[in-house]
Amino acid sequence: MSAAASLNLPDATGHFGPYGGRYVPETLMHPLQELEAEYFRAQHDPEFQQELSYYLTEFVGRPSPLYFAERLTKELSGAKIYLKREDLNHTGAHKINNALGQILLAKRMGKTRIIAETGAGQHGVASATVAAMFGMKCVIYMGAVDCQRQELNVYRMKMLGAEVVPVNAGQKTLKEAVNEAMRDWVTNIRHTHYILGTAYGAHPYPVMVRNFQRIIGDEARAQILEKENRLPDILIACVGGGSNAIGLFYPFLADKSVKFVGVEAGGLGIQPEQHAARFQGGSLGVLQGTRSYILQDEFGQIQSTHSVSAGLDYAAVGPEHAWLRDASRAEYTYATDDQALEAFMKLARLEGIIPALESAHAVAECMVRAPKLGKDKLIIVNLSGRGDKDVAQVAAKVKLQMPK
Image 1 (cartoon, rainbow, N blue to C red):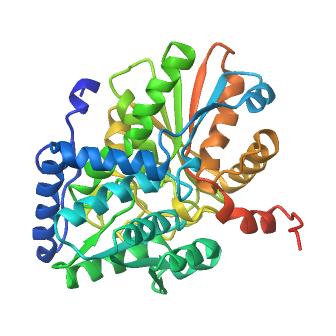
Image 2: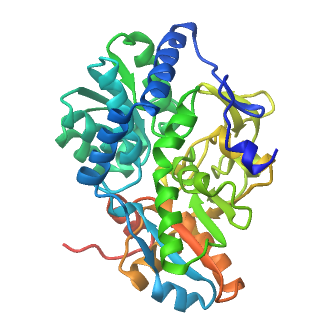
């Protein structure tokens, strides 16, 4: 399928080719249909768009800068590197873009309670933030392991008035948090909206989240044209569920000269249960509402995953990414824990920017590619979040002395 045709996906049933769709219990069909109808009405409602634009500008602080990483560029001695600074958004990541869009939809639908899942905690913080803004009750489900490694964000959510529910089932990470959020939603559909945080799940979530996040790519496209008078050669973004990446990629979809590179979590290496790189060991399956690439065994049982980054530690990938890979429009690779940690430290030391461990995976791939390219080439790396939440964990792993 051509890039132009791909711009029209998903189809009316929520499919990106063989991926996507709506695989949920009958109880959730009505709220998903209600959400789909309200979302598409809002897309054509100038008042909704004006209100969303107001909050993105006045509250989030958009547009986020496109920053020339001069010292990193010089260090790598290759392509010119720009960073899309989503880490400078209010709450510290790209997640607030989608959370704002969805809370406005929830308000339009008369919902009074918000639930969300979170891995690294950034989506949880964003959801708690918008719930506080609009006076709604908020419950965040978070794997118990993630609660421990992202303790700072747990406190932030609680300070914002949210109830944080540790999930002790299974691997105690993001997959289990999503399961609990879906169970809650089934029970409380009349007054509750589920702010799903990534471009995954049952239709309309993948397309809805993508469109709320495409502001990243829309801004980056205009900014690079202003700064360089041409489009970039490569876009690089980390990929968990895939919202920050698809938000950057989508506005460039018809620009065939622009290469897309998504970076998954290579963990401890591409061995079963040691990584979260779905395109390196996954297969087609259905998980938590959609059809995509999933890390599973020969019997269809979901495999355990591992990543130093809680936000990438997930067994499935967004359906639009699977489609872009099949269509050879995007390339997907991975960075190991060690590579991400090295990139984390290098960006801090060279640019004075502490990235989220998720974003450090994208920086790691940039460190591989930039030296191989000529100095006339341009790379945009999506710096999807800031790394305050990860400092203690990184310090322990790289044996840094923390201040007393």
